[in-house]
Every structure is written in C-alpha cells, then in structure tokens.
Length: 444
Image (cartoon, rainbow, N blue to C red):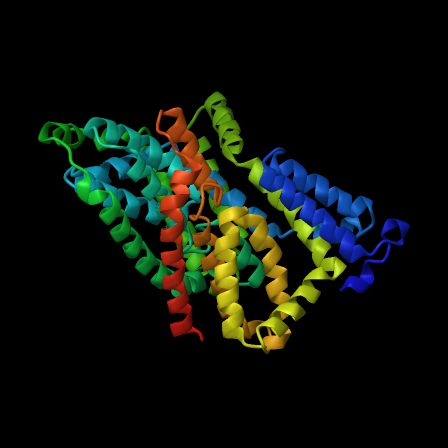
C-alpha cells in the first residue's frame, strides 16, 4: 500500500511522516490542551499538505457509515429526551427498589447499563445523573457510590451492542459486523460482567447504605408520571425507536446499512416532531435538535479517519501487523489475548476512540496470516471488549467518566482522579479477566 505514497515533499519517507503526524496528534489529544476535533482536522489537513496522499484519497478514508449512524442516533436521542421518558425510567427504578438505598444502587446500575446499550454512554449519564443526585438528596445518602456505579454500568452496557459505544460503531461498520452479531457474541459475557460488577459495588458500598423510613417515604412520594413533559412525543419516540431497533436486527435480510436506518429514523422523528407544532416552534425544535448533535465528536471522527488512513496508506500498519503476527508465533489465540489486554490498559490511559480507529486497519492487515478476513472475527470481539471495558480503568479512559466527574464537581461531590483509579482499576481488571475466560472458552 505504501507504494502509492511517494509524493511527500523533500523526498521524505511517507511512512515516517504519517507516523510522526499520528504520534503528535495522540500526544496533543492526551494533553487536552487543544480541542480534539481541532487537532484531528489540522493533522488530517497536514497529511494532504505535505503530500502523504491526495484530498481524494483522504476523503476515501472517512467511514461515512460510522458518521451517519452516530449522527442519526444523536438526533433520535435529542428529540426523545424532550418527552421526559428517561427521567421517568430513573424515578421508576428507585421506586421499584422500594426506595432502599442498596436496591436503588443496584437498579440504577441496571437501568444505566440497559440504556447505554441503545444510547451513547455520555447521553445516558447526562440523563441519569441529575435524577440520581435528586434521589440521593431525598434519602440523605452519599452520592459517590451511585455515580461511580453509573460510570461503570454505562461503559459495560455500551459494550453489549453495535450502537452502545463509539468503538463498537467503528468496529462494526469497518469490519462489516451486524447489530445481531454484536448481541450474539458480546451480550452473554457482558451480562456476566455486569453481575460481577454489581456484586463488587454492593460489597464495597451497597451493604452499608442506609436511609430513615421518612427519607424513603419521600422518594416513594415522587411522581414519575410528572416527569413526562410531552405524551404525544413520548409515543412517537417509542414507535420510531422501536422500528429502528427492529430494522437493526433485520439489517442483513433488508440489505440496509446502520447509517441508513439511523438517519431515516432520525428524519422521520424530526418530521413527526415538527408536524404537530406551529411554524415558529417547529423552527426552534429543528435548531435545538441539530444543536444537540455532538459536532465536536463528529468532526473528530472525520479528521481521525483521515489521519489513520494516512498512516495505513503510508504502510506502517501493514509492517506492524507482520511484526505482531511474528511475535505471537502465528497463534491467533495469543494475538487475541494480547489485543484484549493491551486494548484494556491502553484505553484506560488514552481515549479509546482514536486507539480503536488505529487498531482496526492493523487487525485487517493481520487477516491473510490467519486465513482471511472471515477467520479473524474473534480478534474484533477481543478489541471491542478490551477497549470498551478498559475505558472504566481511569477517569480519562472514556468520555462518560469525565462527564459524570464534571457534573459531580459542579454539585459539590469530589470526583478525584486517584480515588477513582484506586477503586476502578482492580474492578476493570476483574471484568477483563472474565472476558479472557470467555474468549478462551468460546473462540480459542
């Protein structure tokens, strides 16, 4: 592949130029001194300007399926959250546990995990955390255990499906894996990990959480139905999201890509939302919906795809793939375990999205050594489990972690890096160890 890239200025080696740009990009993203979307777009432009590849080739590197799926799901969530359905679910969970603090801790974890399987993790915690703060205030119990548990549950739940976590969206769209395949291969082990996590959280905090009967009565007196702000929108959202989920399941026989399904669902829900409102309100809703799309994330992906494609085009990833296959002695099991654990620890210290974006073409390059693209499917599951669960290891491992920490700090709840890591790293290692046993038993 590197043979095409021979027009770099001053006769420099395109492989090393693209590698240096990627390394500098990573370093600046990790420093958090510059917004990650800005640095990704500048690095992508640099790849073209110095001649690593042409603009046409750069655009070829963008995975529009990922971009479309992310944008469509963000629009669906933006509209449906206005109905108040997510606040209703959180209050319902607390009351289903009869307002017992330990029961609420367990049920809010399950609720967060289930929502994260279908919404992105950051959206899930943005919806659940404010309600959690209100419930904890009524019960007069410490908030930290609840928020910690929700961070973990969001990253664990997001691992279970194609649409639950950006790394999975990347892997699914670029490796050609369907929504159903993610459910069949990842959901079983995620259920085990979630149970193990809930037990650890209960032993650490849950068993000691107590509230007075008066305080519990206050939570039971909360009216979940009052949190529904728009009943018509709630019904429309549930119908459209339901159809989108069925379409994801039937995507293969329908010959549809995830981006088409998500974008069509988003457009239909926007149409329904605007149909019932007058012109002025309709225009406001459209602006609000598009304003809610995380454009920083979208453009970060666009730039990152180009940067990673530049490194792939320069030939580095093919070289690394050959070295990795040689290092594992040609054993796919060894390669799988190496990818699982390396992904987990690296995703705890670098953002798992750029890490996964770089690993995908690397793993694709390993396919010929293991008998073709259809034979390396277990490696994709190892990458997904390691990268998504590894994000729990530190406060900077995943976007949801930092989002919760930010909300907590604003509400006077300290969320320190070291304290979090001290609790989180051992729990993350336990969850990855469970996955190690699972992939050994199921694939190797």
